[in-house]
Image (tube, rainbow, N blue to C red; front, side):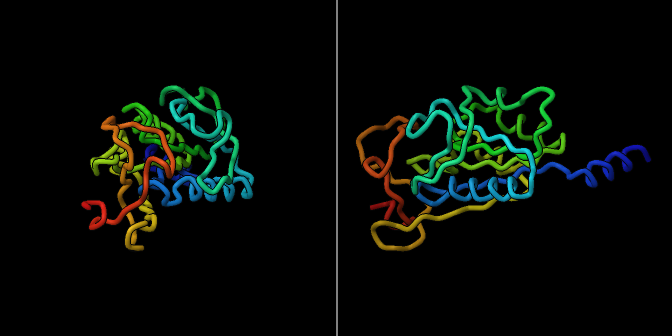
Length: 190
């Protein structure tokens, strides 16, 4: 009976959850993450936003979308830094999750188990079409997964791949339109 009472108490206080926003580059993942976080702010929920220190493309203290929209954030070097002891945050946003270490799913689970709504955005596949970083594990434990598609620059169909334009075989290559373009399944193979 005590377990049921604890579950009821958590639900009435706003139970935690994990939401994943994934897709290719230029699909609007960061825009969607920011939209959800802004709605949480409107609802007067306390939020914290994190991004990996490895992503140096835009800003050290803000998430910035390809459309130049931004929201304040904190860069951290590893997933365990996201857990702030004693913090009463209600919503945690995490961008570029594919760049975090494999501890991220456990961190997200711990936050959700403590009643925090966790919203995670990241690439689900690398430029070779392979699952990327901790994203597959996060997708497996999430209550919801939203897969966004860009527009294929070759044919105009929905794009789910990040096609690399430059000659570099490393899994991680930070870049923009000079390095990547979105492509559909058919045009990705061209």
